[in-house]
Amino acid sequence: MLSPSAFHYYLPAYLIYSLEHFNGDSLVCQFTIYAVAPNDGDDETRFQLWWRERMRKFTPEQFTLLERFLDLVSQDKELSQYNGVVGAKERLRRHYNREA
Image (tube, rainbow, N blue to C red; front, side):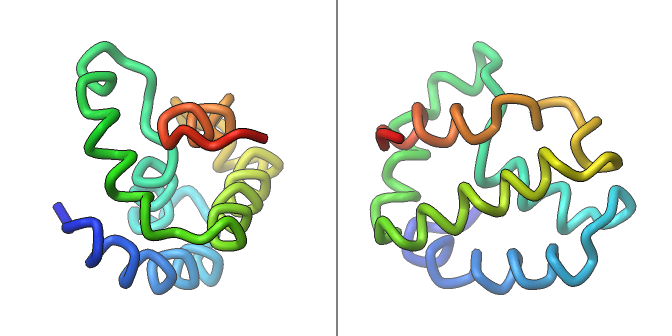
């Protein structure tokens, strides 16, 4: 688990690696998807404040790039089949209290 500052610092490297290894066999890609757009499960909801704090340092432009990453994931036939990918961008906005 990374602090909000560490998450902000390291996430770009994880995104780059994920894009270079953009397939369902890449655990880094899978974990990056879930780190950006967590599931809606009951046990996940109690961490909303923690997730918002993690995203606080991201600029609107960086947030838009995260949304674009999720768009790519949802358009990929292999990755879009993972549980939780459907609606990921909407969850990202909702969990991190950002409007469309």
